[in-house]
Length: 129
Image (cartoon, rainbow, N blue to C red):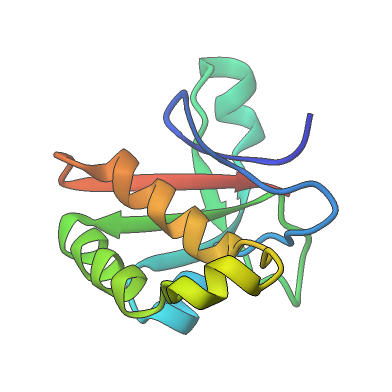
C-alpha cells in the first residue's frame, strides 16, 4: 500500500513508492518552519487505553517508529509562499518542445499539507516509517 502521512485519522500524503524517501524532516531543515520529531509510540497507553501517544527519541541512540511534524497556521502560510517561490512555470516553448519533467514530490507534499491545513490552527502530521 505504501507509506502514508496522516493527521488524526485523515490521510494527507502517500509517499511515491520507490521514488520518495521519508521527507518530513526536510520541512524545518529546508523550509525553516515546523517542529519535527522522531518518535516511538507509548505501547502501554496504546494497548490499555487505545490512545496513540508518541514519545520523542534520539534516532542515533534508539529505534524510532515514525516521524511527527507539527505545523501552525503561520507555518502553513509560510510554506504556501515557499511553494510559490520554488515552483517554476515552464515557458510556452519549454511546454512545446521539452520532455516532461518529473514532478517535485517534496513541493507536492508541501502543497498537500497546506491544502489539508486550511482553516486549522495547527496540524500534527505522522509519517509511518
